View 1 (cartoon, helix red, strand yellow):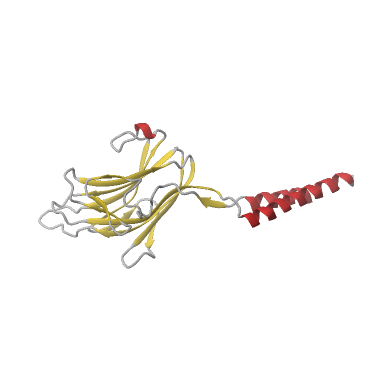
View 2 (cartoon, rainbow, N blue to C red):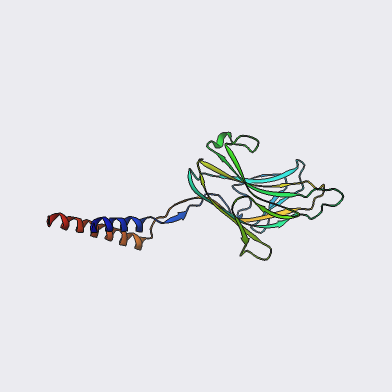
Length: 216
């Protein structure tokens, strides 16, 4: 019984939750490197800016992460500059954050080449509507917000997609994004000092087992 308890303690010590770095340049310090961008998307001061100056009705920024199946964490900071112009029968511009799912990046596209899609939240002139995840105030600065969502994926790849849809007929909306993280939640590797303690506990457990066998 003591041996089983020690082994359980050693295993529990060796397993802890952590996250890998699933996206390239999620803080936009290297411009838009690693990201795919359509129409009115730019970077300024380490922040991605999506605008509504688009000839196709939407501006899009996205990137895939090889998370594998399992628990995945998605989070980012944002500043919404959606126009409040809904006069004269205009509808509001709208920003949408969504996740796409696929097992084959070679055949992936945003127009049907995926296995699943899930909306996180949208923002229009009337405010935020959250479908999954949580939005709180961000530490980035005044007016910034933080989105976070942990979920279970059954696909090899998860694609973070950000869109602004130009609806009100004017070029007057932007959406700023920073600190994007999309990664699998995995077992962390112990620090060197922790590894020494881990191996010491493992050796001690083995010694207890040997002594227990010798006393029988």
